[in-house]
Length: 116
Image (cartoon, rainbow, N blue to C red; front, side, top):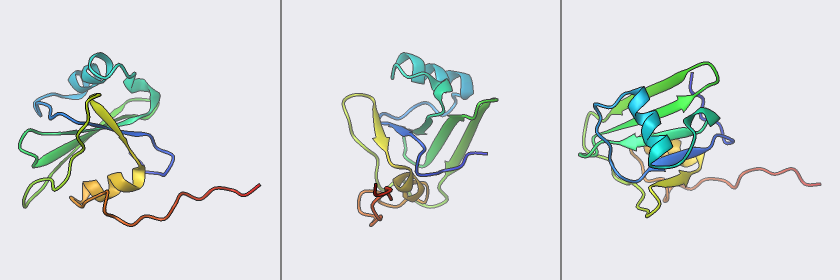
């Protein structure tokens, strides 16, 4: 199961991908285009060209998870733009994105840190 916890590293692919791609092809995109090993536990987020669906790819130590969400109404309201190919996104903002919200406008509390 994919658990979205604050410590989860999330990388969002800025460019859309062909949604006919499966686990092996998306893992290859991570390796070749982004120069990131998909086996390290990072959650990768992809979108289709029309912006009506997203795919999540994650490795949990024993295998890959590939999840897809197709929006029943409308298209994605927000998607990052970047020159490097991927953009880091806090896990809290990913939760907003999954529900087709605006992650940058969501008011999130600051991550808790132990005071020493």
